[in-house]
Amino acid sequence: MWAKSRSFNAAIAAFVDTTGHERSLDVGIGAGDLEDFMNMADVTGVDLSANMLRRCLKRHPAYKLCIGDAENLPFNDESFDFVFCRNLLQNFDYPQKAFGEMYRVLMVGGKLAVIESAVCEHERQYVTDIVRVIEPDHPLFPSHEQLRGLFEDIGVHRVEQSIESLHGSWLSDFCESKKVSQEQRGEIISICRNLPEWYSTKYEMSVDSASDRIDSTLTFSFIRGIK
Ligand SMILES: C[S@@+](CC[C@H](N)C(=O)[O-])C[C@H]1O[C@@H](n2cnc3c(N)ncnc32)[C@H](O)[C@@H]1O
Image (cartoon, rainbow, N blue to C red):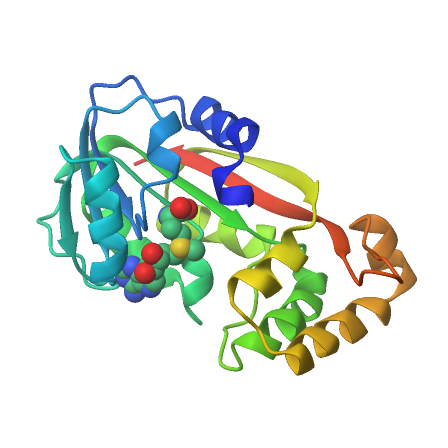
């Protein structure tokens, strides 16, 4: 739901602020949902999943797409002017390696951007508990502090971070899109009902008692900087 949201994608495009002339790399491009909104001409996409790349190619026939691992990118150093990813880094226990690869293939003076759903450092376990009902080995959910730290530790200049939020029934959609069992769905609803009050208030989380529909606010870190 959120990945296709017009206003959300427009906000990302405004944040990354590309000129349209960069040699761009999207790491973990998926089906290329975000690209419809971006001002980009020369786009390379890499993803582990051949299936996602097939879908992406149908939508963006001019893109250069290749199967590859974010932790070992199949490109030479300093090959791109703009390197970015959206909701990729949450796949790693230690995102430093994938982020280091993004930095390696970026030109000096080029722009690096990460868009990732994240929470504050002390809240990571709550979201992780929900995600792990479906994916038991899912890494600890990212935090805004951790993501900013990636940029600062590697020496990215002019780092800017914006925390954005999106309210909706994304958690219910998530349950349905993954075709979760009734038991898993029940477990997620139970976790949501038992979250600390401060957390439910902060993330405007409610579980409708009749339909079990879960509404909540998803928060994202938008981070950009210059190599
Ligand atoms: C949540 S999807 C996001 C897709 C796209 N970036 C978007 O925002 O619409 C994560 C994508 O990362 C890809 N992915 C996961 N681990 C990866 C890795 N180690 N290397 C490259 N791609 C990876 C998945 O196949 C998937 O397409």
